[in-house]
Image 1: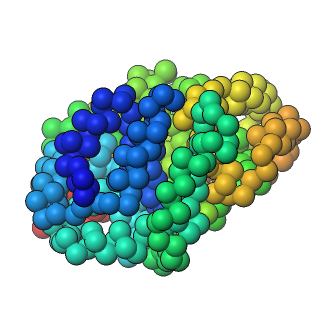
Image 2: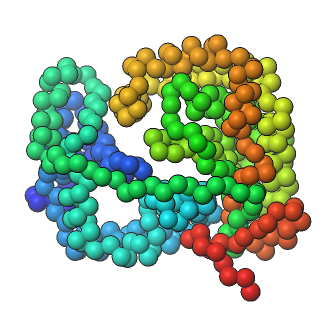
Image 3: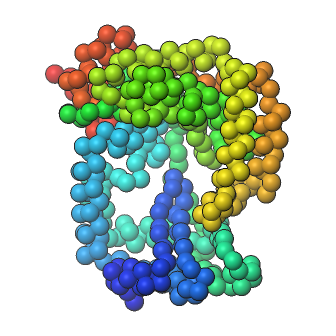
Length: 386
């Protein structure tokens, strides 16, 4: 709610205008996304002003939102994909690291939220200091910016983020297993924390190029084997992800339950061979062609353009950084790519394996593969052995 609108009335006003105002969080930011027809922009911006400057936090609304969030989590806990996505960060970063926790929370953490916590959060984290305003539309800059002058009325205090503890070192390869009875598929998450942080032209960018033939493309080695050759999954992919704080490599796929052990053997073998022999000449040529073509389509829509500009601001990039990336891509030779393989490609002897599926269907075969297996509950906590 706001001081002048109930949540329902606010939503109805946006619907009348054909506009949307959404608020979401990332690991280190609160993001407000606004979409509007040009003719309705003034009225949409007035609603945005109302939401940002005149919020109304009530016990009734908090109770309703908590109930809705908890019901959503309870339903999601029966989906292996959701469970894997929430448990995997805890394995990578640990339970005492803010990055180890899902932004959607747990039933326990949501129940613990009180109205005073919401009010304190707004007071502490909503500030115009270091805020960024990105606008994409058919209007002159000065005219557009003037419409958002109300943002100067937001508080201007410093925002301090929680400390992020160092991620635990990945030791000997180990399977973490979460039981979801009757699951038709086993969700795979295989990966580790890297020492790569986001960069546009350095090792992080090059690691993405290196990974393309391993797990980044439809015809990557992993997807061709698991989907095309074996028919065990609808899709398998691996990627390097990073921000200002940390980075990780992650492979993910939903694998047919009866092929869980066989798929794991294949995944580890493909990764081992890739680490040992590196990228092939024809794979690098295909990567150059594919990434060059996809880059041209990345920024066609308004939302894509806004995301592009936000990235430039967040990481202080040159406005032509994508041209610099294309130039680097065109000149990158096999020797340099394979030096990145040696440095950053998955090491199957030191990697975390999370499997979420039906224990009754897959556990026994997994025990024959030679890995230590630890069972976790759906919140990522160790299950006591009987």
